Image (cartoon, rainbow, N blue to C red; front, side, top):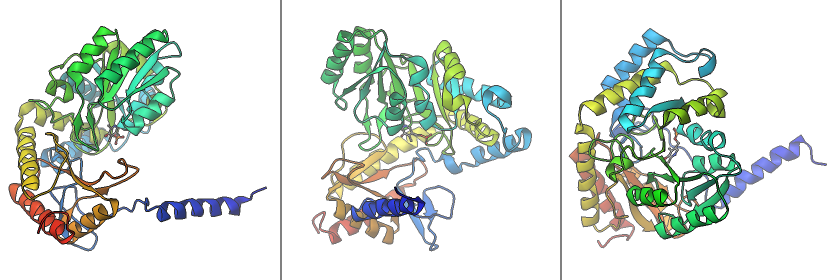
Length: 401
Ligand SMILES: *Cc1c(COP(=O)(O)O)cnc(C)c1O
């Protein structure tokens, strides 16, 4: 029989295994707020190309001031879940504002989008039903589906023919309700889901459509509503989940938004909502300011679009290959995992913070530096970043000297 010491020994061995496989994830420590430039612990300032701070709102003065104001007027925390004594006027206001912004009826807030996805499926669907999910959906969607008794069907990533085959399989299995669920934007490649075509397929097979908009809400589409606006199906999505922790301010918090009765049932039955603390008032206040800014003007998403177009063009002109597209997620392809790590390390020395991704986060042989462009970047930041990529890329033999 193993003892307690054996357990700790076992844990250390697991960690050694992770290190030996080259998969250990270190964390770099920054000492400044999130922004175009961040300070590292050794006191250097580096251009940040790896935050989800798409609109630059994580350190926006108006958002910080609104958060301070909510802290003053509504306190530091609620010390309760929503249904006991954790619901304030501003929580209800934010839920209504998110619904208006995203073209739905009502919204339920969670501590994180991970919880929104984790608590979404089980209350709504049962054994008689089917969930049809893109194979590259986010981990939180996969976990949420695991907690639900519905039959599971997976379709090949972004593959409409296979989606149709899986819809037919779900029908053949006698599913009562069918729900197709996909990331609006896939974070490794910046791929934007073909929601117009997916909606048409769902309609043909009588299926509901749900999307996770964590990498889209706030900036995708002409007025920043998200993937549904971008693909011309605004108002036609049954369920949308999203985060307050990326473009919409970057603090934390998540939500599910959709038809009134769906949200009402989630308030009754969704476990991460029922059994976890309410979102802090300062975050709610900050998020309301974010929506004021985004509903008032498209300036930030327009600047993000222009910055993205500039960077995608300039990095290719420098000789690098990127994943094609228009999303601010711009994967600079290196293919070799060791080279990707070397490039990331050299970029940091040259004043650019951009992280390498390799197996198992992306498929084997698909290693890359995933850059993320922001509205907070000025042209000189992006020029400097391209110059650093060019120098490091030449040194490492990734692009011609
Ligand atoms: C980041 C992300 C989440 C998790 O969001 P949190 O609010 O940080 O929990 C969920 N889904 C997708 C697609 C994401 O990119």
